[in-house]
Image 1 (cartoon, rainbow, N blue to C red):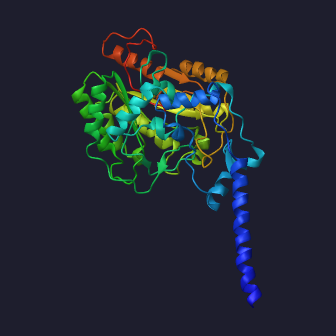
Image 2: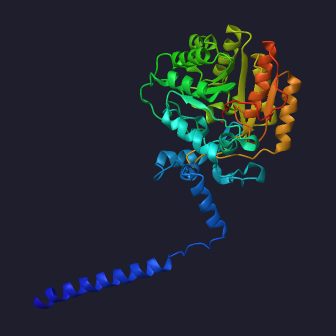
Image 3: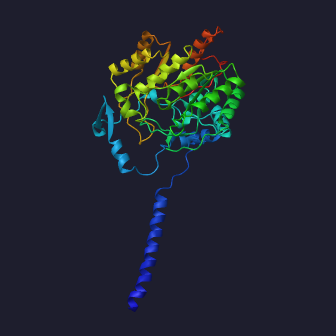
Length: 408
């Protein structure tokens, strides 16, 4: 018995010593020396530090923490091809082509807009939807014309579409009663000509948040009547009364996205969203106020066929939609559906030409085009100015143009 009690402490001490040595070896084995002063890594660190790009973590963060649940893992084993579900083992995720690669967001305007929005407790769809254009829009691009999008009613959506990275919550926080005032104040302060407002879906509210939307628009028009206002709304659960409330609030462009072709809608969008329901929203907005510009958007690369895209465009024209945008679906996180294919720029150009032939007033079609696209706002603003008998701008890249656009 005595031998056992003297042996155990020795064994314990040997184990501690071994663990310490092992830890030391592991530490030494994984030690990385600082990069050379002129190396690419060193230059990147200096650039990020100088430009206050603390958002790098947000930019590369997948938004998915922890392990997937069995239900989530099962869901990710299936994707959509021509309206049918197949195992993703038969469909490898394609490599990102060169025309879709963008820079890490940084720059003075990027940091300034982020600070201003946070100070007013406002959200942007640019961040929530992980838009690939956020650097060129917030950074101002060639002419330093800073752009962004205000997202009303919080950053938690009551729906869970398979393509969208906005956070989902059945019971989001209550609406901020000061948000319409804060939004209108920020917009009037920035001296803008064109503003795009969007929002999460709020099925938890009786009116879907349509009253909140309308109040924000009225306040903007009161503070700055010259500003052209575009609203990218949800479907308000199909309530045409809510659609009418927003359509008559003073906005200039009523936008609502069908997102994908009719055959893929049940697999891509939340079950509460429907292709025909979205068409009814757009049609009723136009019927309520015929001089409204109506607008919608389609994602490509989800497994749709050319005939299905053609059908979707035809249905939009039947609903008297004026403008349409087509862009590439980009998988935001591993919790979302896979990309079926990366559509070529040539194919996007084909749909742009086809859309204009069908009678749309404006078509924006390209891999990085999003539902509210800054070049699109330029042309739409010119359409609105012509309707009002105002002089139009000469170039979409004119440095004097001030506008705020979105990247959903």
